[in-house]
Every structure is written in structure tokens, then in C-alpha cells.
Image (cartoon, rainbow, N blue to C red; front, side, top):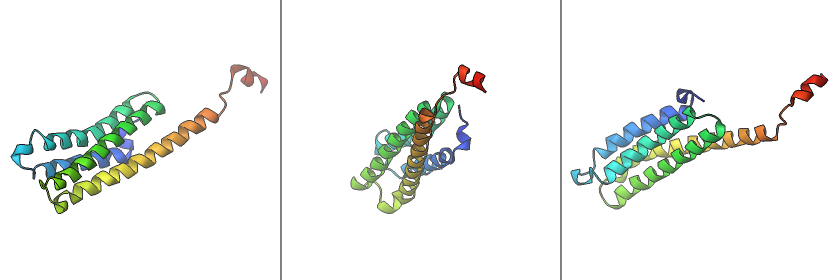
Length: 136
């Protein structure tokens, strides 16, 4: 189990969610229960899954939730771009949110890679048996 506040990506994901909430306020009222709602849920999901993974036991469980967080961040990136394609927001309006999302995705990617390497190294390392300790 890990404390999510020890992970820089956890704090960054919260700041990203705040920025996404800000940009969603610029969407027309007709999108309050549509795209705005989807974007907010995806933004909140990123940090929530990091926290949930930290609350689980073991690196494999954390890794699984980091992958879910990456998926939510990718979903959010798509939705931000879609809001421009639909001419609901301008590129300039989404730029700060998009920067935050891309930064979080890079951080998640690095953390996922690091955790994968740590798991692989732990699997290669022989586990000492009780009889091995008796030989010393």
C-alpha cells in the first residue's frame, strides 16, 4: 500500500481536474449533461484510480489502476479535442487543459514503465528459502 501524496502524478492529476472543471464552465449549457459531464468524470477518474491503486496491496494492483488512469486521461484528451471539432470551445480555450492532460500522461507513462521494471526485477530475483538461511 502506498500513500498517493507521495506520487507527484497524484497532485498533478488533481490540478488537471481543476483546470478541466474550469474549461467545462465555458461549454454551452446544452452540454452540461453531455460532453461537460463526460470530461469531468474522466478528469476525476484519473486521480481517483491513482488513489485506488495506492490503496491496494502490491505493485501489480497499482500498475493495473495506473493503466486505468492512463485510459481516462486518453479519453479526456479525445474529449477536449472533440469540443474544438464541434466548435464548442476554441483551441486557445482548451490549450491549458490539454497541456495538463499531456503532462499527466507523460508522468503516468514514466511511472508505469518504472513499476513494470521493478516488478520484472523482483520476479527475476530468487526468493531465499528457509533452508538457504540455515547454510550461513
